[in-house]
Picture 1 (cartoon, helix red, strand yellow):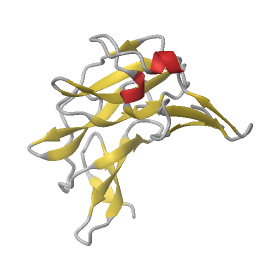
Picture 2 (picture 1 turned 90 degrees about the vertical axis):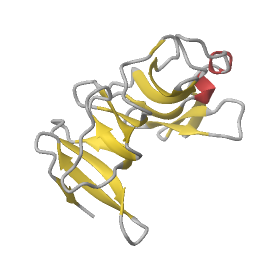
Picture 3 (picture 1 turned 90 degrees about the horizontal axis):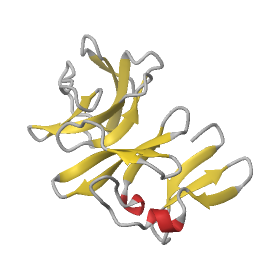
Picture 4 (picture 1 turned 120 degrees about the vertical axis):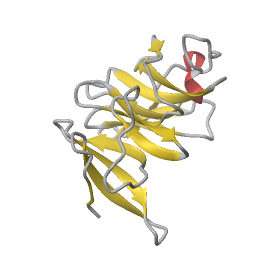
Length: 173
């Protein structure tokens, strides 16, 4: 959320998402328990059921994935849980990330492979060389480069960067 508060999941608790304040050494529910357990509707997910939440740079919003009748759904949720909306998305979104300009990017499935879509509703980017992206993803401060992991032939993952304009990708580690 900011330089001293992080959101983390506790699957053993009735409230799934928590805010840990590393300065204060405290833990509080991200959303009030009653709000977190409210049933999903067409206009809001059940907050306890969202996955992969990522806070916006200003901490006012989270983007997350929730299961829907037609597959994974991308959501933009006020940090206090008071408002939610479904931004445009590509096919089977996962690993949402905020872009520097405030748009939401994600991974989408295309022909059985995960690709970066930045923003999420845009045509997926196929890197050169053609390596599959796995999340989470991140962006350079100017948004020109996207960072992602990709499995290698030895069964490990490597860190890659891709120039969004040229789609040229290079392995960093």
